[in-house]
Structure formats: structure tokens, C-alpha cells
Length: 422
Image (cartoon, rainbow, N blue to C red; front, side, top):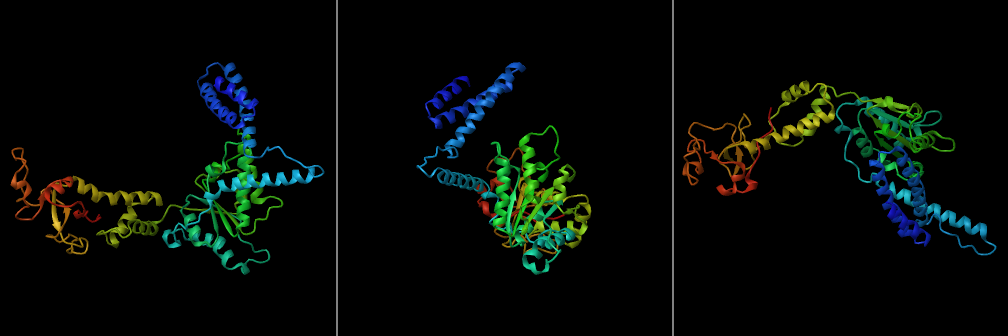
């Protein structure tokens, strides 16, 4: 680290700022590794003091290379005007850079989640329609003292935000802590400020902040200055003097609302608690997540499953259905007997949802073995045993494993999984 910083100082003295900046960065990385394993507190304090100085110089070089600290060439008699023009140019470049960093926060493609795709939560959906849809489509309703909500805090779920992004005819900004927190001092506050400026320019707009407690938790004495400045900038932008908030809705989501700063919590005028889904909502969620996957479940089966899923959240039900959808694939992997079925496996079934046999496709047998006449593979069977390779004369099943299909004259795409059932 000392060798690298010595080279950096030498390059800095020679006004080779680009090489000096890279060397400063490399030396700071080595210094931080040294501090991590340094046991002596005095030595650690000395190293950290020098690191702060090198870091300050590296930030100055970075600004210089980006054109912020460019020396101004001024003609005689035009000093004030030239400096003003240069400052405006530098300010525009900095603003464009920050807005470029926030470009990924703008949701250009709709998530394609409708209100009907969100099972239950009728009160929450009505409140969001009241705050988002009505002001955009019927602005004449909000006159005088009747004004739309400026901030809504969702307790417990962020899936509704996708429905808002789809249904609302507004510019949707979806941000998290990684979009707004920067390692450079002062840049995080400018990112927050530029976010709200972009929202005002493109209004009507919605700013969605997922897990807002990670950005705006309770202020305390031990927190860093940068964290406090981010919270202060949020408070100022959401309800500060000289900042118009018309046409902007701030939508926050958190699972721990009690950890939010009280001042930030007051900015969210409307607070919606999202409870766990009820029986009817769980039933609808099971059908939504199952989708058009072939299954043999009837309405009574869905009702039974919804009753047994008491206490499950929407995410839990999604994982439950995905686990159930993988079960037929596990049956394919574990099966030792397969029988042939017709095309349209899920349409040529009997009254018990069993597929009709004797077709060009294969599916695993439910029983092992399917019937008493099936050939049982013994240790005395030779690799070329005709009984092991021939289908059963009674039920027509083949004794083989999933990965033996090519060896038995079948193609991989001839395999059909069993139906999803109770």
C-alpha cells in the first residue's frame, strides 16, 4: 500500500491525474486490508488518519477528471459571465450523470399484474384505486379541499405495487436502497433530490420504495452523517417548503413499520395494513398459481387445500404450489415402470383422470409393479434379457428408468408427466 501511494503522489505531482487516481484507489484497497488485520489500536488509528487524507485527495481527483474542477479559461472583461456559464455546464453534466444512474428505476414495461390477479385485499385495492386511479382519470373530482393522498404506506406486501404499476396511467419509479445509496459523500442526497425532480417533470408519477425501513429507520445518535442526510433529504422532498407535491404519489412498503422514523411515518398520510389472506383469497391464489397446468383437482379439493393453508401468506402459497408442480417430475425420476398413452394425455382420460393407454407417449405408472404379470428384474437377468425389455403382456408397461428412453427406442420429447392431483 505504501509503495502504491508513493507512486500515486509522484504521479499527482507530475499532474498525471488519471494514473494518480487509479493508484490512489489501489493503495486504499490495500490499506483497508491492512487495517482489517492490524491488532495495535495506535497503529490502526495512524493508518486510518492517512487513509482519510488519501481518500479526500482521490475524491478531488475524481471530480477533476469528471470536469467539475476544470480550470476556467476566461477572456478579459468577461470573468463573471464565463464562470457562470462553466458552472452551469458542470451542473448540467452532474445532473445528467445522476439521472443516468436513476434511469433503471423507471419502469418502462408494465409488470402485467391486474387487480384481479391479487386475491382478496379488497380494502387495500380500493384505497389504492382511490389514491392512484381516480386523480388521474377524474381530476375534476378533486377540487377545493378535497385532494388525493400524497403518501401511502403498505404494511406487509409489495405485490400490490405491481398491480398499481400496471393499472395506473402514470410514470412509475421503483427504487430501493441500492439505487439511492452511494459511497461518495453527498451523492446520495443528490440522487434523492434528482429522483423527486424527475418525478415532478414526468407527473403524474408514482415513486415506489420497497423496504423503505432500510432507508428511513429511526434517527439515533450513533448513525453516520450520510445516513442522516439521506433521511433529511427525503423529509424535505416529501413535505418541504418550496417543493410542489401535486401529481406525485410516494408508495412505500415495509414489514416493520415501527422501525420507521416518526417524521417519515407522518409523511405517509394513508397507511394500509395487508393481513394474511383469508380462506377465499387462499383458494383463488391456489388457482392462480396453478394456472393452466393440467390437474385433476375439483372445487372441493381447492376448498380443502385453502382451509389447510391457514396462516400462510401469498408467498408461502406460491412456494407450496411450485412444490406440488415439481412432484410429477419426481415421479418420473423415481418410476421404474412406464406405459404408453395417447396424444392429448390430459384429454383422453377416464372418469378417474387416468390417461388412456396404448398411445405414442410415455408416462410413469402409479404402482410398482403395475400388475402381477410384470417382469421383475432379478440379479440373474442378463443385460440382454428379453423379459426386461419387452412390454408386459397384460398391462403393456415397460420396465425402465427415465434416462433409458433412448436405449429403448423412445425420444425424450415422448415423455409426459402425470397430472397434478391431491
